[in-house]
Length: 234
Ligand code: CA
Image 1 (cartoon, protein in one colour):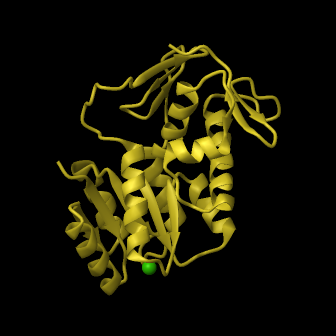
Image 2: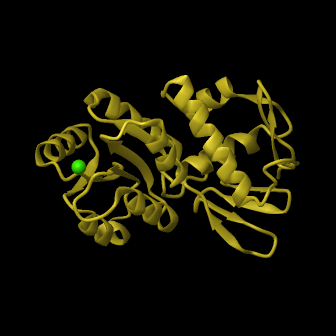
């Protein structure tokens, strides 16, 4: 079954062109001019990936991002005319999985879409790989992108946070370099953006794991080298 993609873009020409390109690439696409229509459709349509323009007429882009990333488990690719690093970091902190600055090549968009869908993985049950990990009193459920504490309290992860957590858990108690992370995650962004994005995701994961920022016990930073997840993993 082909992946479902939602596209929210208010510029008519661009929306039509992108939606056509994505359909031609074999994806199942719904497109929207307004944030309101996109949000209304989210529950029923349950897209694997949402491509979201931040400059929309009816809703602030950052507000929209934060709403969908906390409520839905769709992967999020931001396409924005805002190119500053601050905007990129803000977007990633609000739960975007990747960020493309306009104008961009269609081939670049397709490459990012493929990478995000691969990272997010199929939503349908595919039991060939472990989808539940237990570590340090926590359970990570990769089907639901859910982190569950020992009292059963649930915390949702974004698709990119879950993908990163999975890499850490698969290689626990061993140093993981940034290059290895980039390879495992299939990330194609430049080194600077990738490093910033990883820093942001690691700090979000630490917050969700209630780990200390100053002296983390679970995901440790090895300066100039990478990270180690310290725990036995079942
Ligand atoms: Ca716009």
